[in-house]
Length: 82
Length: 82
Image (cartoon, rainbow over all chains, first blue to last red; front, side, top):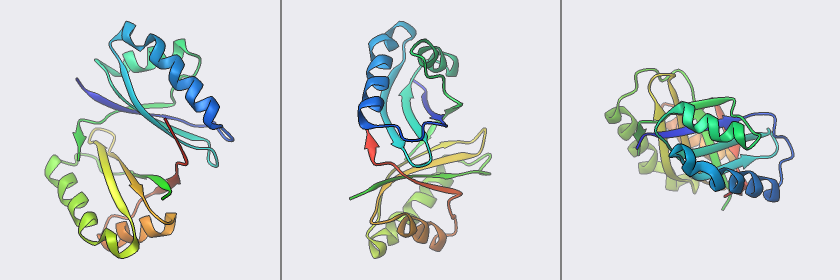
């Protein structure tokens, strides 16, 4: 399954609880698009959130993020991993 | 140990071999700054590379990347992980 790294900007001040809640919302419906969000990292200072997922397509990743109310600003396929 | 996500732009067309070589170069000297690069993901299409590390500081991450010839364009502390 292809891997994707998506990026959210403008999340300045995001808390651990908010990150967990957003991730949990994604997990609760991700299966409907064949997506699995594996991990997410947040920098509250710059307001940047990175989400790593496996998914059938970029559009599938974005569809889940949109349905849970936090569309990504960028969704990058990352076919190379070390 | 604090976690960091650093980002490299302008790596359009990067190959698996190049990503592995860059990561290996970082791994070979990371200990000198107390850094550990855990994983890296590349999108050859947009030329973006993401590196996840644990390190004592943002400066330590950048110092290793500079010494191996590929300074990061952004180094974000990511204290929140889910």
